[in-house]
Length: 307
Ligand code: MF3
Ligand code: CO
Ligand code: CO
Image (cartoon, rainbow, N blue to C red; front, side, top):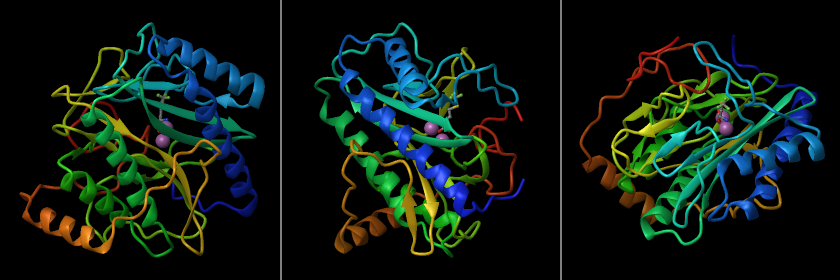
């Protein structure tokens, strides 16, 4: 399946779905407190989607090839969990960080967005990771315009992450989105400027970097879904659904409670980053060859399971 260019009517539907997904995060934010279980967050979000929004929680029973159906309506990934955490009896404690990832379907269109939440008083390391990961997402989004490449997006994210002392998870990536949850293209969160697919007006995809405080390697838990850092270091993720417009980009998953958009780093900071990255040891990039699309998992890297 090739990359879908959305029609004006489809774009209108995606705007609605995107805003609704973000509004679920606005709704749940005050409930993310010490003592709440991730199951309670799931139950509250489910009820809000189904009863208030009359939207469908896309994760519930979602079963891409090789996966068992996802049993809940949202993903909750705590501390060293990278993504796809399954809500359960776990109770959030003071100092935890948690990613809540919401995907709604409204009138057949998907809106996909996630934010990090600080539970009570968090340490400075946890706060810094969440803030810089937010900046990483926005550095990637700011590259989006017709004629830019996917490599431009990945490189911008990787540069800020690695110059901050963090690592970028390679096995999962952003994805085209529309009438289907996961479509082409795959949006890698690392790469080289000027490489990969050229963007065109009417494309819609997610930018959703997963950034680890420690090493980039991950492991999948026995539940078949939850991804954790191998070294147990903290991991953070933010996600928006983004439309390529003639003028550049439009973020579809914004709402009243979306956090302020960070300022771009100023020029001198950018120079400093470039210097630091140039000084960093070379890494062997995973192949950027075309790979099957599915669940934002980048195939052909360190996880040979499935596909
Ligand atoms: N929302 C996730 C993403 O950003 C996918 C979750 S799949 C699920 O692509 F089944 F775990 F919900
Ligand atoms: Co996504
Ligand atoms: Co998501």
